[in-house]
Image (cartoon, rainbow over all chains, first blue to last red):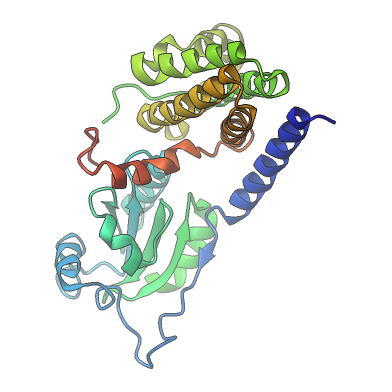
Length: 156
Length: 148
Protein backbone atom coordinates (compact mmCIF):
# COMPACT_ATOMS: atom_id res chain seq x y z
CA UNK A 1 0.00 0.00 0.00
CA UNK A 2 1.24 3.47 -0.82
CA UNK A 3 1.41 6.44 1.54
CA UNK A 4 -1.80 7.92 0.16
CA UNK A 5 -3.83 4.80 0.88
CA UNK A 6 -2.29 4.54 4.34
CA UNK A 7 -3.28 8.15 5.00
CA UNK A 8 -6.84 7.40 3.87
CA UNK A 9 -7.07 4.32 6.08
CA UNK A 10 -5.67 6.25 9.07
CA UNK A 11 -8.05 9.18 8.56
CA UNK A 12 -11.09 6.89 8.39
CA UNK A 13 -9.99 4.91 11.47
CA UNK A 14 -9.26 8.04 13.51
CA UNK A 15 -12.61 9.57 12.54
CA UNK A 16 -14.54 6.43 13.50
CA UNK A 17 -12.68 6.14 16.81
CA UNK A 18 -13.19 9.80 17.76
CA UNK A 19 -16.82 9.64 16.69
CA UNK A 20 -17.57 6.59 18.82
CA UNK A 21 -15.81 8.06 21.86
CA UNK A 22 -17.70 11.31 21.43
CA UNK A 23 -21.03 9.55 21.03
CA UNK A 24 -20.45 7.44 24.15
CA UNK A 25 -19.78 10.58 26.21
CA UNK A 26 -22.72 12.61 24.88
CA UNK A 27 -25.08 13.77 27.58
CA UNK A 28 -23.69 11.39 30.20
CA UNK A 29 -24.46 12.65 33.67
CA UNK A 30 -21.44 12.98 35.91
CA UNK A 31 -21.22 13.83 39.60
CA UNK A 32 -18.12 15.85 40.36
CA UNK A 33 -16.55 15.32 43.74
CA UNK A 34 -16.57 18.82 45.20
CA UNK A 35 -15.46 17.63 48.64
CA UNK A 36 -12.18 16.18 47.36
CA UNK A 37 -9.80 18.81 48.75
CA UNK A 38 -11.90 20.20 51.57
CA UNK A 39 -14.24 18.68 54.11
CA UNK A 40 -16.91 21.27 53.55
CA UNK A 41 -19.00 21.18 50.42
CA UNK A 42 -18.33 24.30 48.43
CA UNK A 43 -20.79 26.01 46.14
CA UNK A 44 -19.97 26.82 42.55
CA UNK A 45 -19.74 30.46 43.56
CA UNK A 46 -17.04 29.79 46.15
CA UNK A 47 -14.83 28.22 43.52
CA UNK A 48 -14.85 31.30 41.35
CA UNK A 49 -12.73 34.43 41.52
CA UNK A 50 -14.70 37.29 43.03
CA UNK A 51 -15.42 39.24 39.88
CA UNK A 52 -16.79 36.23 38.02
CA UNK A 53 -18.71 35.27 41.13
CA UNK A 54 -20.50 38.61 41.14
CA UNK A 55 -21.43 38.45 37.45
CA UNK A 56 -22.70 34.91 37.80
CA UNK A 57 -24.74 35.84 40.89
CA UNK A 58 -26.59 38.40 38.83
CA UNK A 59 -27.60 35.69 36.40
CA UNK A 60 -28.28 33.06 39.04
CA UNK A 61 -29.75 34.67 42.15
CA UNK A 62 -29.47 32.30 45.09
CA UNK A 63 -31.34 31.88 48.36
CA UNK A 64 -34.66 33.64 48.85
CA UNK A 65 -34.36 35.59 45.60
CA UNK A 66 -34.17 32.46 43.54
CA UNK A 67 -36.71 30.10 44.97
CA UNK A 68 -36.08 27.52 42.27
CA UNK A 69 -34.96 24.13 43.54
CA UNK A 70 -32.61 23.44 40.64
CA UNK A 71 -30.85 25.79 38.25
CA UNK A 72 -29.56 24.31 35.01
CA UNK A 73 -26.59 26.51 34.19
CA UNK A 74 -25.73 25.90 30.55
CA UNK A 75 -22.29 27.05 29.37
CA UNK A 76 -22.24 27.62 25.62
CA UNK A 77 -20.08 29.18 22.94
CA UNK A 78 -21.12 31.05 19.84
CA UNK A 79 -20.28 28.60 17.07
CA UNK A 80 -21.55 25.51 18.78
CA UNK A 81 -24.22 23.48 17.04
CA UNK A 82 -25.31 21.19 19.92
CA UNK A 83 -25.65 24.24 22.20
CA UNK A 84 -28.79 25.18 20.31
CA UNK A 85 -30.31 21.72 20.73
CA UNK A 86 -29.43 21.68 24.42
CA UNK A 87 -30.95 25.14 24.85
CA UNK A 88 -34.24 24.10 23.23
CA UNK A 89 -34.43 20.95 25.35
CA UNK A 90 -33.53 22.59 28.69
CA UNK A 91 -35.64 25.71 28.15
CA UNK A 92 -38.61 23.48 27.34
CA UNK A 93 -37.98 21.36 30.41
CA UNK A 94 -37.73 24.44 32.66
CA UNK A 95 -40.94 25.83 31.25
CA UNK A 96 -42.89 22.65 31.86
CA UNK A 97 -41.41 21.71 35.23
CA UNK A 98 -41.94 23.68 38.39
CA UNK A 99 -38.76 24.28 40.38
CA UNK A 100 -36.38 24.20 37.42
CA UNK A 101 -34.72 27.25 35.95
CA UNK A 102 -32.56 27.35 32.82
CA UNK A 103 -29.77 29.94 32.57
CA UNK A 104 -27.41 30.08 29.61
CA UNK A 105 -24.02 31.80 29.71
CA UNK A 106 -21.94 32.29 26.56
CA UNK A 107 -18.34 31.44 27.46
CA UNK A 108 -17.18 33.18 24.28
CA UNK A 109 -17.55 36.42 26.20
CA UNK A 110 -16.18 34.96 29.44
CA UNK A 111 -13.27 32.69 28.42
CA UNK A 112 -11.72 33.06 31.90
CA UNK A 113 -14.65 31.22 33.46
CA UNK A 114 -13.90 27.86 31.92
CA UNK A 115 -10.96 26.87 34.12
CA UNK A 116 -12.51 27.64 37.53
CA UNK A 117 -15.74 25.95 36.48
CA UNK A 118 -13.85 23.00 35.00
CA UNK A 119 -15.73 23.39 31.71
CA UNK A 120 -13.60 22.76 28.64
CA UNK A 121 -16.13 21.71 26.06
CA UNK A 122 -19.44 23.28 25.22
CA UNK A 123 -22.22 22.80 25.86
CA UNK A 124 -21.66 21.70 29.45
CA UNK A 125 -24.55 22.09 31.85
CA UNK A 126 -24.17 22.29 35.63
CA UNK A 127 -27.19 21.45 37.76
CA UNK A 128 -27.09 23.66 40.87
CA UNK A 129 -29.26 23.48 43.96
CA UNK A 130 -30.81 26.62 45.48
CA UNK A 131 -27.60 27.48 47.36
CA UNK A 132 -25.42 27.03 44.28
CA UNK A 133 -23.96 23.62 45.09
CA UNK A 134 -23.26 21.52 42.04
CA UNK A 135 -25.49 18.44 42.01
CA UNK A 136 -24.22 17.00 38.74
CA UNK A 137 -23.13 18.06 35.29
CA UNK A 138 -23.38 16.80 31.75
CA UNK A 139 -21.70 17.61 28.46
CA UNK A 140 -23.56 17.73 25.18
CA UNK A 141 -27.24 17.15 24.56
CA UNK A 142 -28.77 15.05 27.34
CA UNK A 143 -31.46 12.44 26.90
CA UNK A 144 -34.67 14.03 28.11
CA UNK A 145 -35.98 10.98 30.01
CA UNK A 146 -32.62 10.35 31.71
CA UNK A 147 -32.34 13.96 32.82
CA UNK A 148 -35.89 14.07 34.19
CA UNK A 149 -35.19 10.90 36.16
CA UNK A 150 -31.98 12.28 37.69
CA UNK A 151 -33.67 15.59 38.55
CA UNK A 152 -36.73 14.07 40.21
CA UNK A 153 -35.24 13.50 43.71
CA UNK A 154 -34.18 17.18 43.93
CA UNK A 155 -37.59 18.54 43.10
CA UNK A 156 -39.32 17.18 46.20
CA UNK B 1 -31.12 35.02 16.04
CA UNK B 2 -30.62 33.07 12.84
CA UNK B 3 -32.97 34.12 10.06
CA UNK B 4 -33.11 30.63 8.63
CA UNK B 5 -32.19 27.29 10.11
CA UNK B 6 -30.72 24.34 8.24
CA UNK B 7 -32.00 20.83 7.78
CA UNK B 8 -29.37 18.77 9.66
CA UNK B 9 -29.71 15.93 7.15
CA UNK B 10 -28.74 18.34 4.38
CA UNK B 11 -25.65 19.33 6.35
CA UNK B 12 -24.72 15.67 6.77
CA UNK B 13 -25.38 15.03 3.06
CA UNK B 14 -22.96 17.81 2.16
CA UNK B 15 -20.44 16.40 4.64
CA UNK B 16 -20.63 12.98 2.93
CA UNK B 17 -20.02 14.56 -0.46
CA UNK B 18 -17.14 16.60 0.98
CA UNK B 19 -15.69 13.41 2.52
CA UNK B 20 -15.88 11.74 -0.90
CA UNK B 21 -14.00 14.55 -2.61
CA UNK B 22 -11.40 14.76 0.16
CA UNK B 23 -10.87 10.96 0.04
CA UNK B 24 -10.42 11.19 -3.74
CA UNK B 25 -7.96 14.04 -3.22
CA UNK B 26 -6.02 11.97 -0.72
CA UNK B 27 -5.56 8.91 -2.95
CA UNK B 28 -4.81 10.92 -6.09
CA UNK B 29 -2.78 13.70 -4.36
CA UNK B 30 -4.15 15.90 -7.12
CA UNK B 31 -4.09 19.62 -6.45
CA UNK B 32 -6.98 20.02 -8.92
CA UNK B 33 -9.32 17.96 -6.76
CA UNK B 34 -8.34 20.03 -3.72
CA UNK B 35 -8.76 23.24 -5.71
CA UNK B 36 -12.35 22.26 -6.47
CA UNK B 37 -13.04 21.48 -2.79
CA UNK B 38 -11.33 24.70 -1.69
CA UNK B 39 -13.65 26.61 -4.01
CA UNK B 40 -16.70 24.84 -2.57
CA UNK B 41 -15.61 25.61 0.99
CA UNK B 42 -14.99 29.25 0.05
CA UNK B 43 -18.42 29.51 -1.54
CA UNK B 44 -20.16 28.21 1.60
CA UNK B 45 -18.03 30.12 4.09
CA UNK B 46 -17.67 33.51 2.43
CA UNK B 47 -20.60 33.83 0.02
CA UNK B 48 -23.46 31.90 1.55
CA UNK B 49 -24.71 28.44 2.35
CA UNK B 50 -27.65 28.85 -0.01
CA UNK B 51 -25.20 28.60 -2.90
CA UNK B 52 -23.83 25.25 -1.76
CA UNK B 53 -24.35 22.98 -4.81
CA UNK B 54 -24.69 19.87 -2.59
CA UNK B 55 -27.48 21.66 -0.77
CA UNK B 56 -29.27 22.04 -4.10
CA UNK B 57 -28.76 18.37 -4.92
CA UNK B 58 -30.08 17.45 -1.48
CA UNK B 59 -33.16 19.66 -1.81
CA UNK B 60 -33.91 18.34 -5.31
CA UNK B 61 -33.38 14.64 -4.78
CA UNK B 62 -33.34 13.58 -1.13
CA UNK B 63 -35.40 16.08 0.85
CA UNK B 64 -38.72 15.54 -1.02
CA UNK B 65 -38.62 11.86 0.01
CA UNK B 66 -38.14 12.62 3.71
CA UNK B 67 -40.43 13.84 6.44
CA UNK B 68 -39.86 17.54 7.21
CA UNK B 69 -37.18 18.00 9.87
CA UNK B 70 -38.35 18.68 13.42
CA UNK B 71 -37.93 22.37 14.27
CA UNK B 72 -35.93 21.47 17.40
CA UNK B 73 -33.49 19.43 15.30
CA UNK B 74 -32.80 22.16 12.78
CA UNK B 75 -29.37 23.75 12.91
CA UNK B 76 -28.13 27.26 13.35
CA UNK B 77 -26.24 28.21 10.14
CA UNK B 78 -23.52 30.24 11.90
CA UNK B 79 -21.47 27.29 13.26
CA UNK B 80 -21.83 25.42 9.97
CA UNK B 81 -20.61 28.40 8.02
CA UNK B 82 -17.68 28.90 10.37
CA UNK B 83 -16.67 25.25 10.04
CA UNK B 84 -16.71 25.61 6.25
CA UNK B 85 -14.18 28.40 6.73
CA UNK B 86 -11.98 26.06 8.78
CA UNK B 87 -12.34 23.47 6.00
CA UNK B 88 -11.30 26.12 3.51
CA UNK B 89 -7.99 26.72 5.34
CA UNK B 90 -7.13 23.00 5.43
CA UNK B 91 -8.15 22.36 1.81
CA UNK B 92 -6.12 25.38 0.72
CA UNK B 93 -3.04 24.10 2.59
CA UNK B 94 -3.46 20.66 1.04
CA UNK B 95 -3.84 22.17 -2.44
CA UNK B 96 -0.68 24.24 -1.99
CA UNK B 97 1.13 21.17 -0.65
CA UNK B 98 0.22 19.02 -3.66
CA UNK B 99 0.82 21.78 -6.21
CA UNK B 100 4.24 22.66 -4.77
CA UNK B 101 5.30 19.04 -4.44
CA UNK B 102 5.31 19.13 -0.61
CA UNK B 103 3.39 15.90 -0.41
CA UNK B 104 3.74 15.55 3.34
CA UNK B 105 1.98 18.89 3.96
CA UNK B 106 -0.62 18.04 1.33
CA UNK B 107 -1.46 14.62 2.75
CA UNK B 108 -1.47 15.85 6.35
CA UNK B 109 -3.81 18.79 5.73
CA UNK B 110 -5.99 16.67 3.42
CA UNK B 111 -6.24 13.85 6.00
CA UNK B 112 -7.14 16.25 8.83
CA UNK B 113 -9.86 17.82 6.70
CA UNK B 114 -11.16 14.33 5.88
CA UNK B 115 -11.32 13.36 9.57
CA UNK B 116 -13.38 16.47 10.30
CA UNK B 117 -15.69 15.90 7.33
CA UNK B 118 -16.24 12.23 8.28
CA UNK B 119 -17.00 13.13 11.90
CA UNK B 120 -19.64 15.53 10.64
CA UNK B 121 -21.04 13.09 8.08
CA UNK B 122 -21.12 9.91 10.17
CA UNK B 123 -21.75 11.34 13.65
CA UNK B 124 -23.04 14.86 13.18
CA UNK B 125 -20.11 16.15 15.24
CA UNK B 126 -18.73 19.50 14.09
CA UNK B 127 -14.98 19.51 14.75
CA UNK B 128 -14.48 22.79 12.89
CA UNK B 129 -16.87 24.50 15.31
CA UNK B 130 -14.54 23.59 18.21
CA UNK B 131 -11.88 25.78 16.62
CA UNK B 132 -13.92 28.91 17.25
CA UNK B 133 -12.86 29.56 20.87
CA UNK B 134 -9.24 28.94 19.82
CA UNK B 135 -9.50 31.33 16.89
CA UNK B 136 -11.04 33.85 19.22
CA UNK B 137 -8.19 33.58 21.68
CA UNK B 138 -5.73 34.39 18.90
CA UNK B 139 -7.82 37.23 17.52
CA UNK B 140 -9.62 38.57 20.59
CA UNK B 141 -11.49 41.33 18.82
CA UNK B 142 -12.23 39.04 15.84
CA UNK B 143 -15.38 38.85 13.83
CA UNK B 144 -18.64 39.98 15.29
CA UNK B 145 -20.42 37.23 17.13
CA UNK B 146 -24.13 36.83 17.57
CA UNK B 147 -24.79 37.06 21.27
CA UNK B 148 -27.19 34.68 22.94
